[in-house]
Image (cartoon, rainbow, N blue to C red; front, side, top):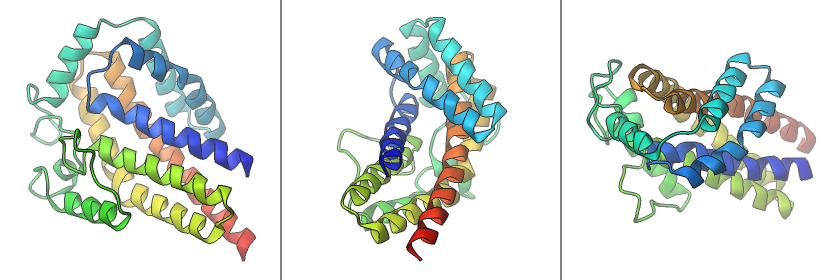
Length: 229
């Protein structure tokens, strides 16, 4: 159980730190914090047997180690996410919102947004007032996964196994129906349109992490369900 608690806390941190560069310009302290998790993700990729994920984690680590000018990061952030660049995949700016990738109109605040909004409401959470993006922004969706992971720790600590399994099912469904479906498309657009290896490898690492995490959650839920039967 201690291993489970440690990993769930780690997952919450990873979801938060990996999603942040899609919403804010990263500065040196942010990069230093992200760098601390590179070794952890490298080990995760090794255990998962995903060589592509491992290579992307290594690429992200090297891009941070090589040093980056904050002004270049700010410029690339603006080009990718603030309407200066056009993404070939969707015909829209590289906007990190699920609706842009998964709705027929390819516009923000469509059916996927309504869906995740309802899910957040069901779980009694809403946006931070300082967060100005719609609820289906990648940072919001990954923050929701971080919330569920922290909640999972709370259930495990007080022995609420039934609630823990239900929480894992929620995580599994959210990954399957949302993040796993559109993050690869977002990563594809970022890779095509970025001139910085940091953003290229960041988007690929997010894709690899979500894939690996989905597999882990499925396995963990199955194991816990068998124990409680």
